[in-house]
Image (tube, rainbow, N blue to C red; front, top):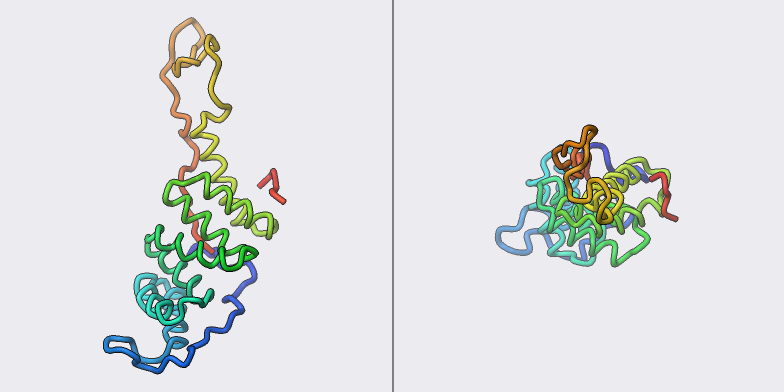
Length: 203
């Protein structure tokens, strides 16, 4: 994912991409090279800021090696950067289910869910990522943003009791006049400006 939010360990996943004996040019229309070549070229295109082109190569690689977490994660990052958030979520989810201790996959699942408007799921997986790597700033920032959005959508403090000023949705103002209803989401971030790469209360 762009905006500098790469894996906090600073590099590509440690898993070596196996070609599984898939020959070069296995089918008509396949790009030149083998699965590892597709993965490497796709990762390079992603790093150079060409997620749509990367997505095409990485999708071919994932089709040939569906159990490779490295390929799936790279494909998910390309899909996210290309704006295909539902597809990115499914691939991040597959990586996280295969290895629940993969903090980056949990992070990717969380930010993808946020882009799709599912902030409850987002908060759950971002909290897991923060619990695994509490020192990672962009994990904590994403979790804060999701929690702020959830709080804004809930009215920040929950429903007001009947008879309390503002309970009707139109707050009382000095002088006995009614003010305009406030948008509980005003001024709070609703989505992430950044992307993918124990729960901390200050997170």
